[in-house]
Image (cartoon, rainbow, N blue to C red; front, side, top):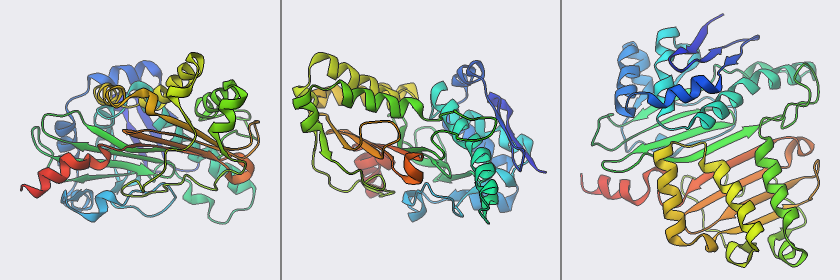
Length: 349
């Protein structure tokens, strides 16, 4: 059985039927001192044989850069299953340039969850349960990594997509970021009761229930939740109306609950990027954020929420598998995939 490990940050992955991820919070905090993204990406590429280096490398303008997804599928790039231990170790510092310690733990949790999903589907007689494999996460690098240059990279597999764009003189643009969980609550086996994305569900429900009755009537935009996040895997976020309740119209305690929810999503991203995203949010006006809810209010009922404003979009849904399957996405409406800054850079080449 092939082993792939991120021991550089103690993010260890054992692929296969009994695979497990091992990452402690202490290990993740230490990972913040990792080298620059360009140095980490180049070290990884240099470690690969020519055939794998070619599979991992794309021009910055390649259409594959925008073709992100969150379903189980064959992906561009190099999977963890193709890497030996020293090669996979080199991905740890790269991930640590995009994610906070909390974000690293969340990514590890998603990958580890594939083992649980494989067990659940195997017990249910699903024929292709073997596709649930924590080794099927792929790394792709777009452009030539160098400090002072524009380039991009992605780490992606089922229920996890981390898209990062490096631009000269700017924080890394860490968006879009997708994180999901199936099952949202483990119903059987030794992990019974475990909830991978508990805070994402609980803070959203806490906010909608905290709202006064008139405010809740404004925030709840539909009694039925959509079957999926509305924007799906759009390369560019489709135009959406600002629906629901504006933060400017909320009571102070309601605004505080909304801030906690937004911070949950920003807090798992690289500190430098998260600081910039918060600053842009405040400059645009926190009061312009809108919180919208659809579906039932109680645990176990299908539900959806959205936080939408001038600079960001957060979507969450829990509707599939009898409301036991969560999808979340964070989109930066200024800097998704580098945004206008990258487009200007490419047009001036």
